[in-house]
Image 1 (cartoon, rainbow, N blue to C red):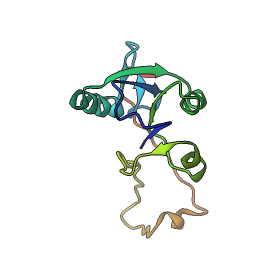
Image 2 (tube, rainbow, N blue to C red; image 1 turned 180 degrees about the horizontal axis):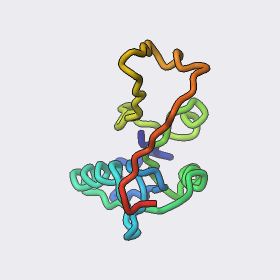
Image 3 (cartoon, rainbow, N blue to C red; image 1 turned 30 degrees about the vertical axis):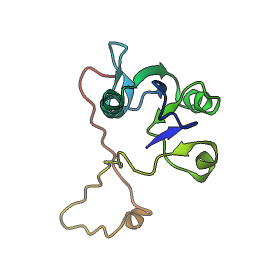
Image 4 (cartoon, rainbow, N blue to C red; image 1 turned 60 degrees about the vertical axis):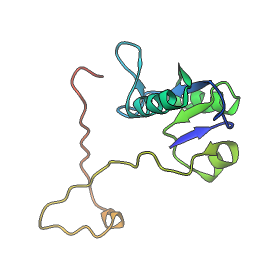
Length: 131
C-alpha cells in the first residue's frame, strides 16, 4: 500500500521516501532505488508524465518526513486507524503479503489461530550477494 501526506495527482514531480524493505522497496548495492514498488511507480510515472525523486530514509524518519510534507509518497505502509488520521491511503491493495506457512502432509492447519502455543521454524530466502 502507498500512502500520501496530501493529494499530489496533479504534481509533475513526486518526492518518494525509500527505505530498506527488500524485495519490495530498497536502495540497491549501486545506490539506486530498486524493488517491486520502484518498478510499479516508474511505470505509473511514465504513463502520467511524472518525475520521481527518491529520498532514502530510515522507517521512522520516512514517516516523519511524510507527516511534515518533505516527501509526498511512501510506498508499502500497513494501514492502521492512527495512520489513517494522518495520511491518505489508497483504496486498492497493491501487494498482499506473500508469506506462506508450510505444514507436514499429515498435519491439519485450519487457520493461523491453530498455531497458538506451537513452535515454528522461520526460513528467509535472500538472493546471494546481498546483505
